[in-house]
Length: 261
Image (cartoon, rainbow, N blue to C red; front, side, top):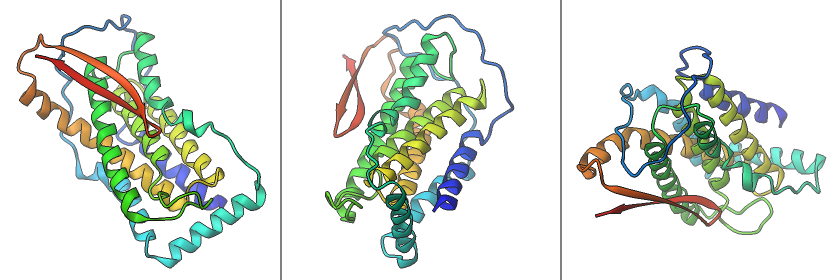
């Protein structure tokens, strides 16, 4: 069981340092100033197919687990080991730390450590990531009918908490990978901790957590790819006013993007 958890931790930490250009000191910038104009996102390199291999494997592993008895046996074994050593474990920390990597992006901006995009652009990208993740995870949850380990309902697969956490982890990695890879590493460590807590709280199987990580990472990567095209298509007037309204629905943080015409 510990080998499986350790492997998951090592793989997700490796994603956090992928494509890093070296360890750099944070750049000193002026404190963040919010405005009602939408600035053009910084240019980035074209996405590579290789960037999606590991999260796609995570998602594939989870999907295969639905009908693969070997993977389901591993799920049962890991759960038995955890419950055997921690039968009364219950902690709600995972309900909160799932948002920590994304919140850290705003904290760093307030501290004057700027990321790749201005805060408004970054917020919209994060909102798109959450919508992609939430839509895909909800559809699969409603159709997979996998019973949770604690028997509470049939919405176990995939783990929404883990997916949300890895959306944030990839978000902070994308924003700060050119400043220092350690921000991404920290984000992925927190996201991995969220997944482990979901298993210790008896809410998810190991394969649920692995798949959730994959969905979260892919959703954020797709958001960074699609946002420049969406902006060029819908935001012709650079002085249009915008408002971001965060809301919390179904245990997920959602940012509503409103545009004044």
